[in-house]
Amino acid sequence: MTALKPIWIWVTTSASSVPKCRVVTTSPLAVSTQKSCAKERRGDYLGATIQVIPHITNAIKERIIEGGEGHDVVLVEIGGTVGDIESLPFLEAIRQMAVDVGREHTMYMHLTLVPYMAAAGEVKTKPTQHSVKELLSIGIQPDVLICRSDRAVPANERAKIALFCNVPEKAVISLKDVDSIYKIPGMLKSQGLDDYICKRFNLNAPEANLAEWEQVIYEEANPGGEVTIGMVGKYVELPDAYKSVIEALKHGGLKNRVTVNIKLIDSQDVESRGVELLKDLDAILIPGGFGYRGVEGKLMTAQYARENNVPYLGICLGMQVALMEFARNVAGMPGANSTEFVPDCKYPVVALITEWRDEDGNVEVRSEQSDLGGTMRLGSQQCQLTPGSQVRQLYGSDTIVERHRHRYEVNNMLLKQIEAAGLRVAGRSGDDQLVEIIEIPNHPWFVACQFHP
Image 1 (cartoon, rainbow, N blue to C red):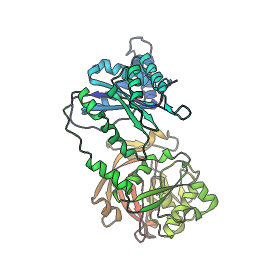
Image 2: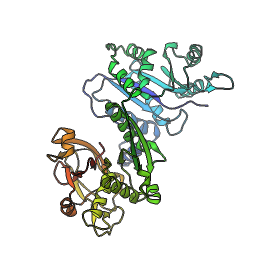
Image 3: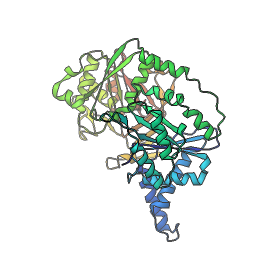
Image 4: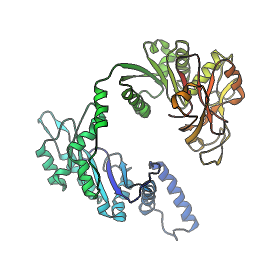
């Protein structure tokens, strides 16, 4: 038996500036494997066989070191379950990291499950003990154990865990389920985890002031009102697909002292059952997505929001469907579509841009036959906002930088007719070539953006 979820490894470094964070998955490691094969063919390894150890584990360590440049502390999270085949190269890499940077500069934190057995009326520590045993078998001794449970883990059970897992009792932290994730830092602090980490690394850190954090918790528990936002998408059966958007909406609610009730609506249901599903919503959001499935339902949703003065925010594909709907029903372009869905449509208001410059100024070229993942317009891009637009007033700046992940763009060849019908281009790319934001001026709030704000 093994326990639940991630291991954290803290690696201290000695720099002050903060570069952008890094995420390492098995996909870039596959690329690293290909690069290693190329090096082997060139003779860089002098005939040595390419292996998971050291070639793949070295690639993982290189990414950790690269992501940590300029930081004082690097926090590395490894998801999954101890014992999974997929995680073994990552675990081996962090084992080696302790050797490379020094054990005194490394802390292993392990999140484990401590289930409550109702029939016995007690929590069980065996899953945690076996999980730690699995880690020890590959050379990792946890320094801190974070024990997840639906209730507080009693002191005597924490003492048992400490004894059998070879960690100090004060390093066994109880993490019971709470109704708000924002309460967790306070729970960890109340058990002295922050002080334990600082002493472990000899960090001279001042006492944390959590007054502002506690105010957020208070405001979340005591809202001044509530709103219901309908999120219309095609992946609603897997809400984690929209996790960042959902959390952003909740953050907006905290800022404005309101509870945000999010109603997930399948766009295919809108197609089959109609816009009655959209009644009683205070606002509508259409997030990003790929593929034609459910697009017509999103078009119906955008039309409903436009015609009924319901506040609307479209993100990525949500902007493209808003543009397509406006072109069809307002600008006199029946059947307007995207060449992603209908390559030979009469009015391709959204189409593949074959050439553009990336964030470093390099020219990127793509075509319909290009790989989807390798030819996207990715990452932070500059956007120039239109004076007098709603978004210009919202941002309070002429220029913004936002994140992108898409292949298709607004077709500038058909844009004049759409603008003449009343749609405003509220933002363009830094080189003024690509449409980034659209809005409808005579609507209470109808804004859509190609980027992911």
